[in-house]
Image (tube, rainbow, N blue to C red; front, side, top):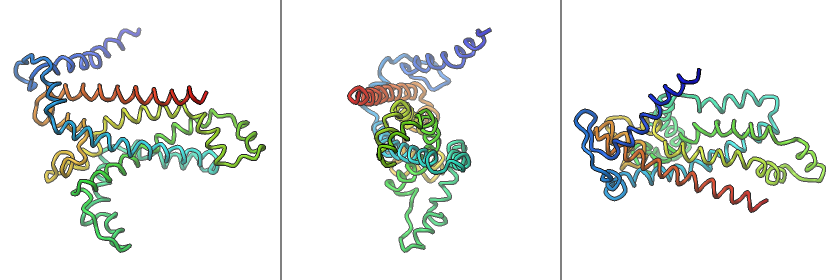
Length: 287
C-alpha cells in the first residue's frame, strides 16, 4: 500500500538529487555527451567564480538584515494579538498572513509599481514630504533595500503564525503568577515568553537561514526587465540561486550549475548546524 509513495519519491525525488550530484562532476550542456571532469567544477566555484562570492555576500547580507526583522516583527505582532487583540485576532492574523500566500509574481509586480522611479508610490510620497525621488531599482544600495523590505513584508506573517502557535502552549498560570508578584508586561515577556519560546525560535532561525539562502523568486521577478542585468544594478541583489539559474538555464552549463547548487547545500548545512549549536548552547547555559 505504501510502495507507490516510495516509487514516486525514488523517481521524482531521489533520482534527481543523485543525478544532479553526478553531473556536478561533469561538463554537460544538457544535450551533448557528458565529459567527466572530476572536481574541476567545485574548484572553479570556490577559486575562480567572482560572481559566486558576490552572490553569496549579497545573500548573507540580506539574511543578516531580514531574519532579525522578521523575527522581531513576527514575535511582537503575535504577542500583541494574543494579549491585546483577542476579539479581532483571527482577522488581523489573516491580514498579516496574506503576503506569505501571495504568489511571488504578484509580489514582484507590486514592488515594481511601488518603487518605480517615475510613477512609483514611494517616490511620490517622498516628494510630497520634501525629499528627492530615488532610483530604487537602479542604484545598488537602494536595490538591496527594496529586496530586504520585500522579503521582510512577505515572510514576517508566517513567523507570526509560528509564534502564535508557540504562545498557545505557554500556561496562562505563569503570567497570572507573575502579575500577582508585581511583574509588568515587559518583565513577563522577557522572563516567561522568550525562554518558553526557545524551541520555536530554534526552528524559526534554522528554517529562516535555509529559506534565505534559497531566495530567488522575488528578486528575480523584480529585476527581470531587459534593461537590468542579472541581479539588478552591479549585481547588488544577485543571490546564489539566481547565479545558479543564470549558469544552468541561461548559459546551459548544467555541470557547473549543479556544482553551484551543491556548494550552496554545503553552505546551508554549515550555517544551519552553527545556528542550532549556538542556540542550544544558550539553552544549556541557562539551565
